[in-house]
Amino acid sequence: MLSIDRSLDKLIVVGDRVLIKPKTLTDKTSSGLYLPPGVIEKDRIQSGYVIKVGPGYPIPVPDESNQEPWKEKQDSTKYIPLQAQEGDLAIYLQNGAYEITFNKEKYYIVPQPSILMLVREDL
Image 1 (cartoon, rainbow, N blue to C red):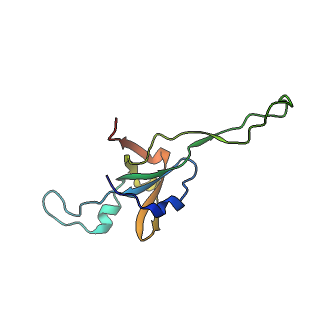
Image 2: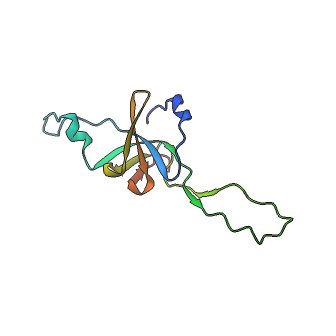
Image 3: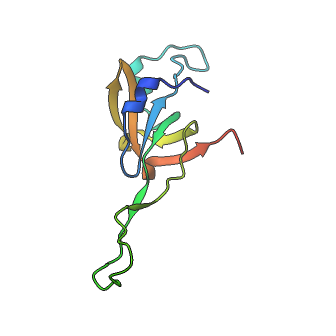
C-alpha cells in the first residue's frame, strides 16, 4: 500500500474519473537489461493505486413540472457510483489516461471505461 499525501485533499475528481498514482516500474527486464524510461512509460497497459474517485455517472433529475406543489423539490444530483475505490490497484489503458503533475509527483486521471481490472485487498 502507499501513503496518501494530505495535500491531495484539495483535488476534487469529477464525473466518472479516477486519480491514480502510477506504480513504480522496474527499469530492468527479467534477463537483466536496463530499459530507458520512455519504453516503460509507453506501455499500453499500466498499473497504479487509486488515490481519489469521482462521484460517478450522474442520473438525470426527473421532470418536476407536474409535481404536487406541497412536495419538496429535489435539487441534489444523484450518481451511480464507480467500481473503483481508494486504495485499489488499478490496471488501466495508458491511451485513455491524462498525465498531471501535482506537488512534483506524477498522477494520471483515468476515466472509468479505461480501467481494465481492479485488485482489492480487503475482500
